[in-house]
Amino acid sequence: MYKDNLIVEGTCHTYHVSEQNALNPQAVGMGNGLFEIINNLHPDDYELPPEKWFKNDTAQELADLMWLETDIDLARFQSTKLTDYFADGMNRLDTGIELREKYGEFRIPSVLGSVNPLADDALEEMERQVEQEDVDGFKLYPAFFEDGQTLDMRLDNPNVGVPIIEKAVELDVPHIAVHKSVPYGQTNFEEYDVGDVEDAASMFPEITFEVVHAGLSFLEETKFLLQRYPNVWANLEITTFLVAESPMNFAEVLAELLVWGGPERIVWSTGPTAIHPQPIIEAFWEFQFPEAMRENGVPPLTDEIKQMILGENALRMMNKDPDAVRSKLEDVDDEVARIRAEQEERPEPWSSIRPTGASGPMQQPKAGQKAASDD
Amino acid sequence: MSSDSSDLELRVREQLDEVLDPCSTFTEKPQSIVDLGLVDGVSIESGDVTVDLLPTNQLCMYIPHMSEDIKNRIGDIPEVDSITVETVADKVWTQDRMTDEAYDEREAYFQERVEAHEITPAYDGAEWSDETTSYTGNAED
Image 1 (cartoon, chains in turn green, orange):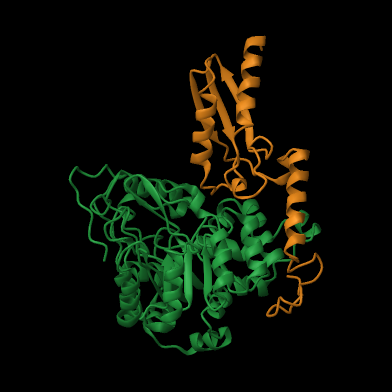
Image 2 (image 1 turned 45 degrees about the vertical axis):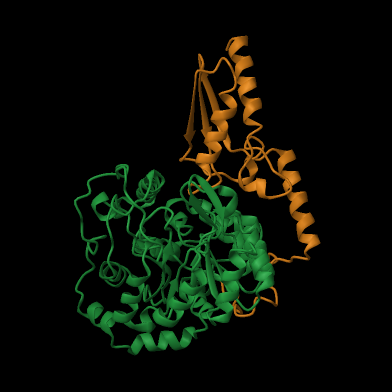
């Protein structure tokens, strides 16, 4: 908890960004580009060294980062299936399962599976992940990169996205998180608007759609989505970075989402292990809309609304009672509570991530490197 | 500034006016980066052109796309030898950077959509709407 406020991390990952995992020059460019963006935006005290980015993160490193270095109480794990760029998909599901097995469903209340919707066995793989891995929903991307082409994986594509959503309904895991706003690799940026979410939300009112990176682009469309569809939620992964780095930009984004969509479906998210959550949590708690915006009809950002955004909304999105969770947190005697009780002081930022030998950006993959299988 | 360089800058700015803001291309009213106030400056030395680009937010992921479009369009001008696109990081884009025409056009389009879909804000400037169910407080912090 941060100043007695419940913190639920909306998106945590175990990244695997390395030359061994990169399948093509685009993956190398993407991993290096992400590293540059991340370090441009972190406060100086939280700069992420290359030897802690260009590596294969473990579940334990992610856990130590969240439980020892931040005030996160609960975290939702989102795996990714970016097998167009990275052999293992970049954020493997098995580390999320490992995390939940070690720390329990109370601390890790959601693990999202991921499939390549274009794969022949996509629906079977969804079944497998639900039946064997007990995933709580799926994380999807709107496009796939193959042979220099962008392949459409949008939610409203009747041959790709729609069957995936129908399968999620059939499997009774009615939660779809979809990456938006941030073009990945070389795929066409046209795929990253939220128009398909609107169609999908209308077609499948029983599904919860979580727009990841909400507000970073297509702000107007996103605020209308929130206003019109009660089954659409805004996940602020990376968007929250603005609160520390560019608070005026953050004010513009949050104000629009709040004024049009209301405060209930805005979900806190930062994105460890790429991003250190703690300075962002602290900056958000101190954040307030500028007076000029308040005079122009933007609501006051009360402590109640901040509490909703920081944790309560994510819990309600998962059909959990925030009061019950808060109450349990006060009494819980689990691994996290114990290590925090024993902790005398907070370790240095990123000390939980063990370094590798990487000293700088990735080099291009060697000729002949083969893609891994898609399972 | 000589008339030649003045003429070149004019043509550079004409080309910049053809570069569309990527986000706005998803609407029925695409707008240029010039009209939106994303071009913070243009400088020309001989045939070397530098364009200062101010994104609507510092995490804008479409800067590479805009930069590429800028380079392609300005690159078509014979007198241009090189093009550099610099991202401005020490300023914040606000709506008042838009031209009056662009702002009015955007507002009109916005109102059209609001009315067409009968969209009402959750907060009307003074109170939360009834649909905003779980938030009942009105406490100032």
